[in-house]
Amino acid sequence: MFLLISAGARVLAASFLTMVMGAVGPVSAQDSQVFLQFATHIVHQVHRDKQAFAQASTCLSWFYKGSKPSPPAIKGIHWQPTASLQPEKDCSRHYPGGMEAARDDFAKTQTRLSVSLTVYEFALVADHNDDHAYNAAELQDLFSSLSLRLDTTDAGPSPLAALTDRFDHWYRIRNLDEVMKGMSILYDRGYRVTAGDRAELDRVMK
Image 1 (cartoon, rainbow, N blue to C red):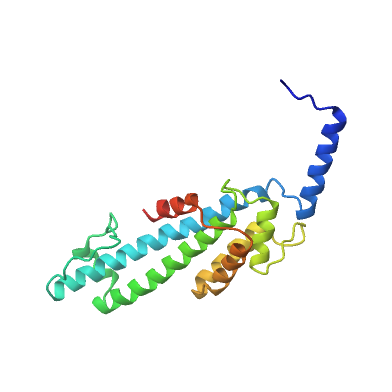
Image 2 (cartoon, rainbow, N blue to C red):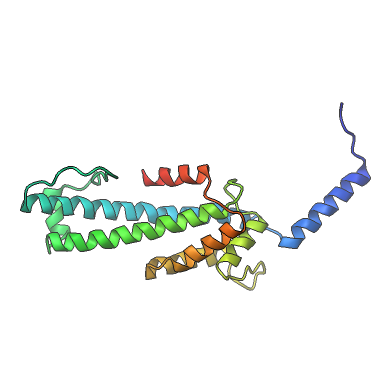
């Protein structure tokens, strides 16, 4: 049995939807792509950080093996060498300072990778319903959690520009205090790391 909705009821429903969306602000066609473009910006950095960390890790192991007997195998995350890296030829060129230089770069690249992955987790959590887009309410909550003003006018920076600039700032200073505070605020509002978020984080780490 089909439920017939009168034209008046449809107009009333449309008016109600418009009123609800207006309460949190409209999302333009451009803004609807904020999540995908922001996520892409972060993932590109994650991949660069993974390659840099793998190089540092591989060369540190190579220098270590050349200086003393191989240590016993340690269980945990195993980073494969980059396909183009040949330790015997490349490590001394990349790290003329030897093991100490590789160890220093290992620590730096590990920190950079941690920053980019943590911000990516934050971006995924802010997509509350896991539909790969920020709706008006999610975008407002995300900006509010970072004490940012969401300016939907043409006068201010676009939401995407504001978010990518903030990510680049976090990445430069290697500080996640603001990210963790924002994550805590989102959690207070019912946001969580979902199974889909974990699967996506695992995917970009492969």
